[in-house]
Image 1 (spheres, rainbow, N blue to C red):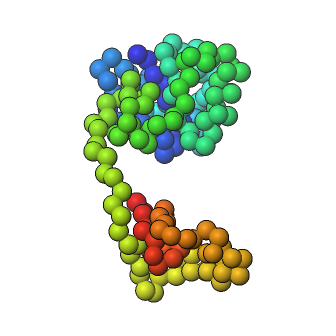
Image 2 (image 1 turned 120 degrees about the vertical axis):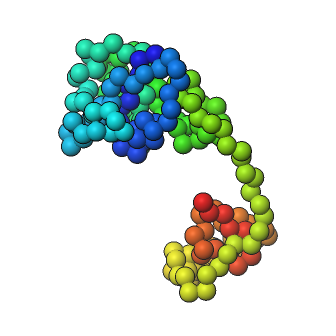
Image 3 (image 1 turned 30 degrees about the vertical axis):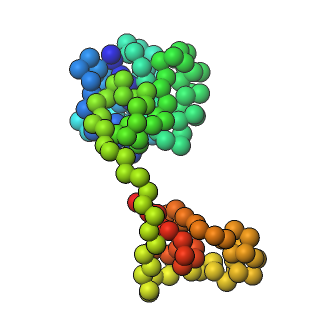
Length: 171
């Protein structure tokens, strides 16, 4: 299976650092940014793109550009790349936990999923984050009465929970 990785940024680098299955090989890494052309990305030179793709023999292009994935897909379709040869990056960040289309090309050792444990958020006394700075405004607008009733989970609380009684979850 001949693979082209389109994107030399964070997504592309993560994929390039993942082990390939036996019958797969990366033949090219390309990127729309002229600043990345010719640079080395995890052992692969970034080629000028996308016109060079028209002259290549490949089985699939994995679009590894994150937020620009749909723009790149549209670009590839306009170039005449068949849609069935374009794979968007959905799942690249969770392929260690779940089966995604990328598991057909990359070996990802599965990790055990750790369920959420209900425990109070850690509060650091001197830390004053976004929640602290927005507290007075939220109080004036009735935010707490409207949205913060009963038990709650503050996702991404960053040691600055929305209320002292929530469970905080942060990676």
